[in-house]
Image 1 (cartoon, helix red, strand yellow):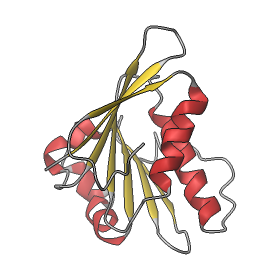
Image 2 (tube, one colour; image 1 turned 60 degrees about the horizontal axis):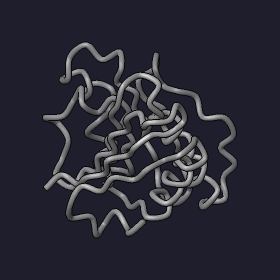
Image 3 (cartoon, helix red, strand yellow; image 1 turned 90 degrees about the horizontal axis):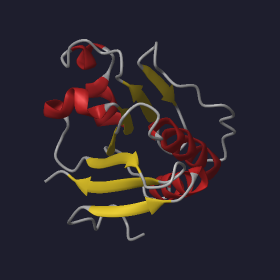
Image 4 (spheres, one colour; image 1 turned 90 degrees about the vertical axis):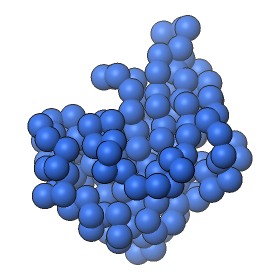
Length: 154
């Protein structure tokens, strides 16, 4: 896949299985820079957490840090990974009741200090900055197949 920096129009990627979702996330991990925002959307069970875990683990490996299991921050809303080269803030906004609550859990700091990886990003759509890379994961024809529609906010 061509880089996320060069993304100019929505691309659809077919993900035949979970390993394909992980490979896509790893390709993103290789390109991350301070200030990047990755907005993950899709229905419950679509594969957002699979993508997030693979991206975080891959970036950890690149930084020489053993991440181990990556828990979903469903109840804490945010999990911070202070990697040696680039901090990652992993948000899961499924339980967010009001978009403005995102500021209270450190969204602004995440935007400024590292990479923001946001599951259920549609819950704060109006707060996402220009340049946000959206990854919408949806079911495919086969049970294990998914589609990832990747776009960049102008």
